[in-house]
Image 1: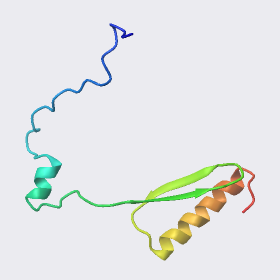
Image 2: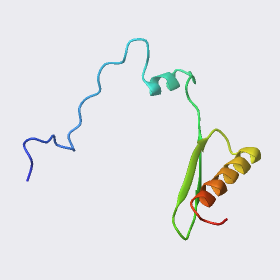
Image 3: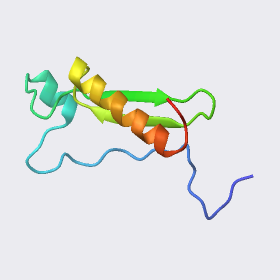
Length: 84
């Protein structure tokens, strides 16, 4: 049964016009522009006993970055009463 007051969640609207001053992301890539394109890394630590997770989006996977992440994760877990 459908609810007349709710929109159909499977109905999609067509995309609107391209905003003034910019091309769609895929078109910029096709034309060779890399402005604004990049990657971030999601680092996650999970305590298997409590399932408490600590996650951060960081720019790289270099050793100093990971060591800092793990240090902050341990501090977070210790603050919740979880010994690491």
